[in-house]
Image 1 (cartoon, rainbow, N blue to C red):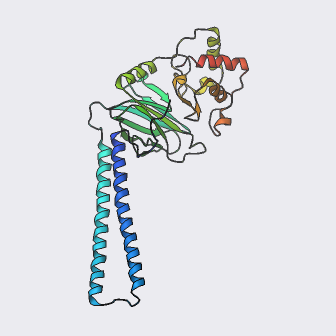
Image 2 (image 1 turned 90 degrees about the vertical axis):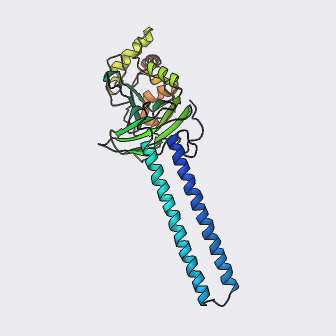
Image 3 (image 1 turned 135 degrees about the vertical axis):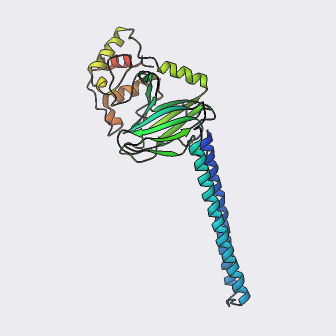
Length: 321
């Protein structure tokens, strides 16, 4: 899955990011204008001081200099007020964006060391809620309210193409809105140092047409399929008998732990370990065998499986799409 465009706040793909990008350019041009003016006055003063060996301290000169100083103070104050007013106005607009839109939807995002849990709650039948990891699907032109919390330390979610940063603080739920104007895959990441693997904690946001989003939700709402081959059946028994079922949930079988990411559709995701690896069969085998060697500090321990058990397990996991 290729990331769309550049992971940058200056490549906005949604209304919130567009407003923040506009604010950045306002600050840039105002500060550039002031910088050029200050440098210009500095060189003018240096040139005049070099040309006039005898200081001009006449009353008219003092009056002109005093006027220039006051003009500079007034212009600087007005410039700062413009920046302050614009920043507050855009911040308020971004904070309210989508709040009263009937198309809005909600997604719960929980930060872990070092991965993202993404939940699509079902208020009518909570057991029908969809849970995935390190991947978020949203329909375009739809305001999405993100409810952010954390299971451990402070994290910060930043999807620069869609919005600014928002902290995830233990014991508190923070909220902010995102919306995508066009289909694409936008990379998010943790922007608050949260431990050894902070840099390996990314989140893929897939913005798609509403019809495709509905199709994706329907696929995600299905539980794990029944194994069809003897190898897949042996792999299921390996999954249930190994430590896998003690940490992971797979809807449809006797595995409902929540310590690690939900694996019901693990093989449909583009990456493993929060963007650390491309989700290939070989990388999945390496991750299962010795995750700490790939991502030091991760809570997933090495698994002592025979070659046959590993192949059976991979065959079963290949069905989780």
